[in-house]
Image (cartoon, rainbow, N blue to C red; front, side):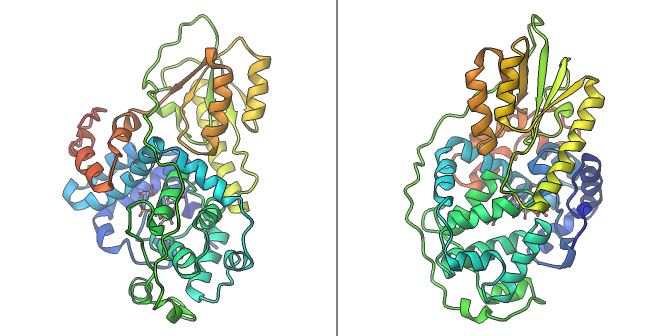
Length: 399
Ligand SMILES: Cc1cc2nc3c(=O)[nH]c(=O)nc-3n(C[C@H](O)[C@H](O)[C@H](O)COP(=O)(O)OP(=O)(O)OC[C@H]3O[C@@H](n4cnc5c(N)ncnc54)[C@H](O)[C@@H]3O)c2cc1C
């Protein structure tokens, strides 16, 4: 089993992984699809970026300090796939609610066997064990595994997505739900992804091959889709805010943004910090452990930076009770993205609307609106922004 530093769980570890990875980032485009022991072809930074121990902006800046854009464009694109998925889901939020509804159906015996690594296809079972033991699966393996689950075994895509959400350290409602829908053929109409034995053997040459031959004749099955994919306007959260000063300020730290002292909240002078726990009872032990470490790291940094008392709330319900008991505070936090945390927190902030303000990072504000159709049209637009073009980036995201 890999140790926690394989998947950095503190900001310091993530920055040092980034620095180390950046030096060889030119090799990424040619090597990234190969599944190798230890996964050193890829950064393994996804959990840190998903929870914003480090931000996409920091990753891009660091990579461009070492290389010209043209030598690392593939890596920069991958970093921005997350932004694309988040921006797209924010404009189609009902897709998330639909996926959650579908995932509550009890899994069949076959699905349960696959989820414990007993599918009969050795390479897929090895990926399952790796996911359960480490909380990580390589991107190419995720594509094969999802294709195996839904096109070969004809299992419901949302249950596979839910299995990933419970185990991945980087579990992200946008990247996960929409990647599963992409493999299923529901994101880009009519285009699905199949796991082919020759492709698996080319990119994972040392894998165990038992049962692999059965995948040769798999036929894609695009599931019926009754999700409401109506496009909605993006929430217009501001990127800066000045408190009136009439009331003391409580600053909310939650798992979707674990670097508040490096955000648009950095100039505020809160009277206290309210730290929200993960409250994901279904998560695997590996996932819970990583999250506890990451949250503890974020709390320590924020406590040191703001120098104020910390109040801990295990979940949104506890937070709501705390607000009722402490109505004297104005509250400010980074707006969570579509997902279960946002569902819970926006419900609380609606009830206490007078005292709540959500802010967003300029990166999200600038780039989410461009995630309207396919990734490459998104990339062609946003990659014109100064952040991708200049080593002396001034925080300018217009494109
Ligand atoms: C079925 C399926 C489910 C997935 N579920 C998730 C998920 O829940 N959470 C998640 O973060 N990623 C998910 N991905 C995307 C991708 O597999 C992981 O982000 C990537 O494997 C993380 O490893 P890394 O940090 O070593 O990536 P690297 O290859 O080093 O990429 C650098 C960074 O770019 C981003 N990135 C890379 N590939 C993708 C991608 N395809 N989509 C979005 N962002 C990407 C990540 O932030 C990553 O850390 C999923 C992909 C598939 C096919």
